[in-house]
Image (cartoon, rainbow, N blue to C red; front, side, top):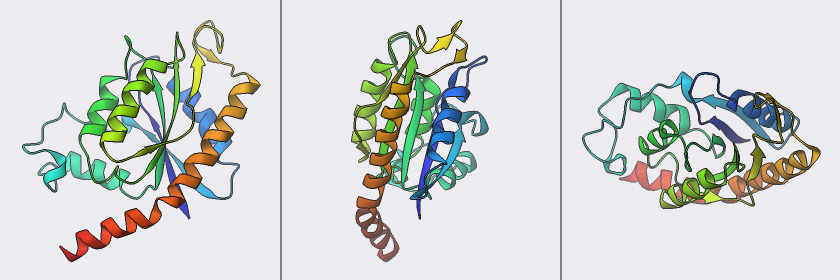
Length: 194
């Protein structure tokens, strides 16, 4: 069965992300075509990228990166839940992405963003980074406004239009993850035979 990780990309105190990520997980869990699991970056504290060589050049020398790789590798695709901080993605999310390479390749990714402007600039950055890693980003992101989708900027109250957009995004992440399976299998075969 297809496995999709829902990555909660903020670790700051009093973050709004857990509500958004739980909404994504609750909606996704009603589906039969895939398994969904929440991956909270708070549960995976990584130092600022400290690898002596780039991740594309082989296994890590650090246990924390190997543990992070083992967490990400089994998934076929991802939904990244990200805020926008100062016009971009959170540094902790970029750092988590940068710790790995092969574990992201040939996997689908969709974005659920939130912020004053819906988190759009964070998604622009994420698309470029994910594309560089060989990921396929799907559809339009779900863009949630801190001004209209949160009561008092703290309690998440998504509109029905967001549920419709999320269903489309989930359909595509699952379908694209399945479609990319032959590429992931070929890459694994190449690694084993090397």
